[in-house]
Image 1 (cartoon, rainbow, N blue to C red):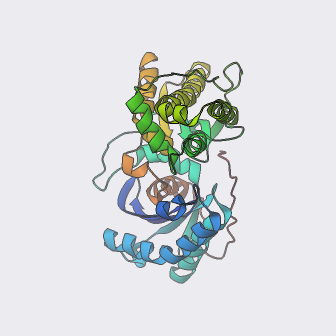
Image 2 (image 1 turned 120 degrees about the horizontal axis):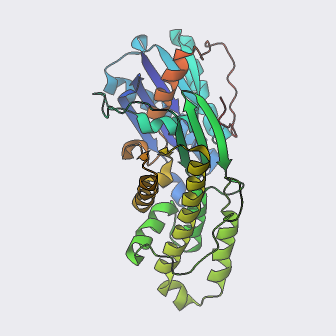
Image 3 (image 1 turned 120 degrees about the vertical axis):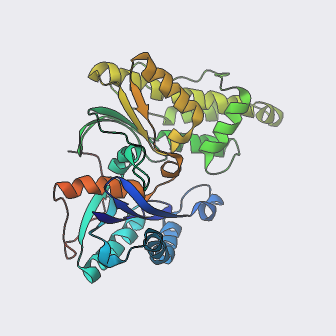
Amino acid sequence: MNILAIDTSCDETSVAVTSERRVISNVIFSQMLLHKKWGGVLPILAKRAHQERIDSVIDEALKKAHLSMEKIDYIAVTYGPGLAIALEVGIEKAQELASKYDKKIIPVNHMAGHIYSCFVQNSNGNPKRDFEFPYLALLISGGHTELVLFKNHLDFKILGQTRDDAAGEALDKAARLLGLGYPGGPAIERLAEEAGNRDYRQFPVPMRASKDLDFSFSGLKTALLYYYRTLDEEQKVSQIKELASSFQETVFKSLLQKTETAMKQTGVNRLVVGGGVAANQYLRKLLRNLVNKYNGEVYFPTFKYLTGDNAAMIGVAAYYLAQEKMYVNALTSITRVPRLVLTK
């Protein structure tokens, strides 16, 4: 089964050709430089860039896969969550191709894609990782922070989610406050590593005393802002590494505490981690230590399917949807759902 997958959920235009879990080709056009000077993603610029690049990215993905559209069985497309006007570009292109080549369309939840990114294989079928349900999924990106019980293929239960800022968003905003630019996560990680990954200034861990599995990071961001305002210019420069390290440490403490609570409550010790924040090497170390404590396992996507949104994971998720005949014809209207959530 060959699937052409399209993802235009935010600021990457990505198209992949997949066969079951194997990625035959995966092409990404990143808009990072376009949005960098604005300190974040501007939706109207994202939409325009998607429109300008989508055709060439599709052509390149097919060329690298050595396939024509006639050899494609299904077209998969992300329909949410994401930026509404960006999602629209991918959906319209999928419907155009489906109509022209008489193909079925598989609408895919972007967050399901992030979960399946941990099981993506290369064109040779590696890694050979089999599914051993159930899993806990920790999804941490610029727009989402969620704990999900992955009970079986396409069977998800959200255990907890952020009530305001996502973890990646909080790191980006902290970096902006500290004058580190966009994207902020990698800059925070670099400075924290130089500082020794320590909690120099102990900010309050968000929702530490709550009994649920939800997250919140807006208060932590405010705590950093108020403290930063008390510093003179010389102190702001001299303490920047320590502040980056302390802020990151507090974000990660929250992630670790909630994940450990979820493991205790569910009895599930197999963890899959998706989303761009999971590229942080220090966080990966902390999560490995956590699951080892419970004799469990943790799986991360390979970096090429982690550092940005990609269509490869959408194609892999679509394969399991196709098994359940969860596709539509080209004339079916597909509605973009910017705030789409994971459900069974």
